[in-house]
Length: 98
Length: 388
Image (cartoon, rainbow over all chains, first blue to last red; front, side, top):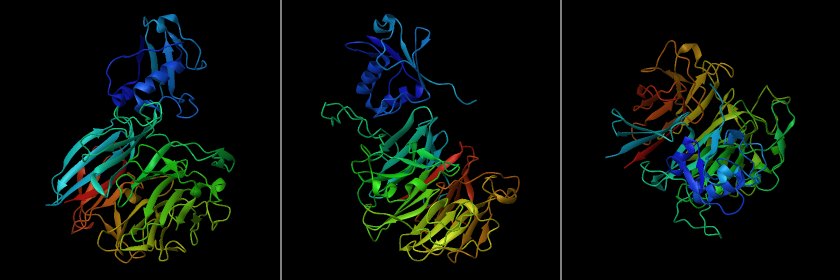
């Protein structure tokens, strides 16, 4: 079970509260997490990455276990603690503005 | 008894303002989609309870929302679990998928260098006059899209962007946006769009082919001030009874065409300044038009600290200031291009929103004004529905 924390605006859009729990078969990467998240909540498509190119939107970042995985390739395996559900995967809106 | 429903999009959410036909007491509901920029909300003329909203922000991009119950509940079209539409049996979630047709190429950047076409947001939604599932969308970077399934999916009408001058289009200060779509109610093949900063374009074959219709416009910020394209048109408007007469608020200059845009002539007349954003036509008097003069393109606030709507009853040139009920000192707000609308009651109601968060209403064609609400976030758009 993968635990995912998404930004408040996207929780509202998807009508969820708190963490989202996802089952992922195969390697756990930020790409596979977004695939599973978008499959369950299709209204989130296009809000975190491009519909077609799958490129991360510029102000979206991916954190886990105290590290920033935003710039990693989308199929780079995430830490075991994320894959096991011990640690959540954070999808974060970058700090911007005042 | 008739009712009026105002749809106000702001920098931080949408609001629905309702009143009976007297237009004296208003109920204010919202914010909808709090924290998001609502560039436009527009109801279907064919189904007044169906309302479409363009929701966006810099972090999460574009969202399209739809209400089928007059704004009480909303959803992103095509994302409901029961809408199993893809070959994999999963909801498609494509109501915000705006993909240019083919390789989009480049347009001009501010300094004239080529810049790749990139989708940023939907500025303007224009539902069909007679089919609640058909909606046109004007987007930044400028292009025209159409949905035929109630906004579940979108397809570009690429004949506009590819008609030949697209590589010369250039962004205005607000971006390179297609911000106005007008459909000729007497001719389903004819449609007009306006792009900042490119100009006005017309199709006479339902979008297959387009041509620039900017003869008579003059823009001194261009190397050739009378070029076919490159003009920063802020808004165009028509009266349904005379669809060949068009009015335009250009970056500077208020303009008029009597021949479906084949030629334009200036009707700024005695306006204190002819920069501005919105232009609207009275619901029952096709020669009565409204503008809000703004001091200049860098100051972006009203002239002399006075919020004045100007009305011409002669289709331009002769203008009168409408000031009763509007602040006449220390006022420095702007009124954006999408932020003015008229209802179809008699007398005609006129409404506008400001960047200071006020929404003003006139229930007497502009003779006097009352603030419906004073302290919303900056108002981006105002639309009005007259409901029976």
